[in-house]
Image (cartoon, rainbow, N blue to C red; front, side, top):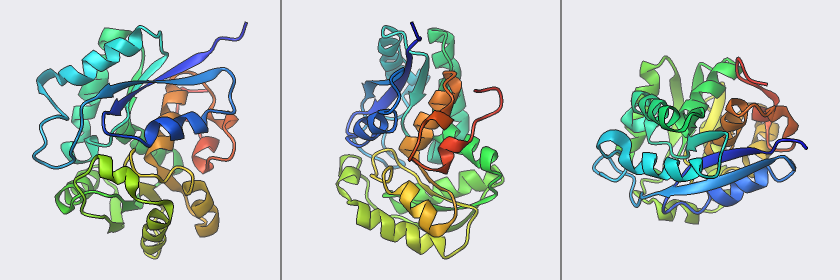
Length: 246
């Protein structure tokens, strides 16, 4: 009997996009499934205290519940590492792996892995976030050696409201930042509905368009030992692997 690979996702509590879109991405694979546990997140601002409690207690408790489902990987399906700093994400992953015995990743770490896999040095950024969040994301990625050539954001502190923006709004933002001719574009938020339009836009614009939900699933598959090239129709991202994976 073929082993079923189970991808565990830690979902922000007010997120309504990641679960249905992640399920769609893997729907063509009989031996891969996605499983969710929620972490309280109701607002995205520099002053919101729900994301990073001391010791990552909410994320770790939610991860413990996924362990009971014997998942093969655990991913924090949030982009907070972009403005808090990727070091926080790496420490969270270390603690999750230490407790669970399975590899861990985050949406931000997945984005960095994709930048490396595609040889990207410059990108354009599309989000629903507040200006202060957007600036922090740009600054943190600049420190890592990546240049943000253009950006669009909606200045919304959400988090639930992010899901209410339609695909044409996101498409317009992507097309606007494409004019800067970056190496890639990222729709950076797992509650912003860019998953289905990203592969369409990258064909039309002739450059990679990454979406945070797809990024999280792609990197989770790689870490769980599933060849992401088995996923068809969800963009160029799924034509690449990361070192040491399938």
